[in-house]
Length: 250
Ligand SMILES: C[S@@+](CC[C@H](N)C(=O)[O-])C[C@H]1O[C@@H](n2cnc3c(N)ncnc32)[C@H](O)[C@@H]1O
Image 1 (cartoon, rainbow, N blue to C red):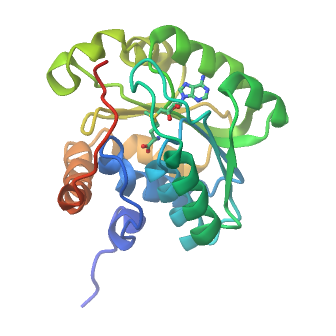
Image 2 (image 1 turned 180 degrees about the vertical axis):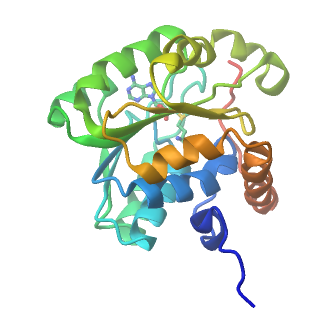
């Protein structure tokens, strides 16, 4: 008897290896599926902190055999949402990436604005915005990096669903939702509402069909529930680790 192949084989197949901070855990299965479909040549993450999302990108890129270089850009000094954190955060993530992903991960300890000069125009296939989450900062990051995006590029915005209920009073300074809403109609897009929300814009004019298929599938009723349930499995694995985290509500 023939079994129907899974719709999201990479979300099913891979098991995350680095679970460090809770905010992004729920999106790891979606990251696996997206990276395997897009097979980015250059991926840039603005905001790496302890490496949860960057490690997921690296893991998927290696598993699917894409020769992706995943750049994690961060000053590792904190920001107005997180407060400041210990210098050990950078040392730990640098050691982990050097050991686990020596060929696919590159850490750039720079401000986002300074790091943009390191990339050629039209070179980046996947950009993940997860730095300072005010409206002004997100708008600046998007506009600064837009010329760097390739004609097959995708942009991810984390924290489209941060509210006072899930993040406390600090949520009032978040402007990702507003910026994403203002921008999304110009591009094929999808949204996941679990785990503080993840928005995706297909910015490149010659996007991969497999990525456009994801956008189409996002219109189906169970798409969000599927990735929320897969993400909840990951979050349950994290709970016993009991990490101490910087506050989200300074
Ligand atoms: C929410 S954390 C990133 C979380 C990470 N993606 C994860 O998976 O846990 C945001 C990070 O962005 C960094 N950051 C914020 N604004 C920055 C800027 N303008 N330049 C460099 N780093 C910045 C902070 O130091 C912080 O580590």
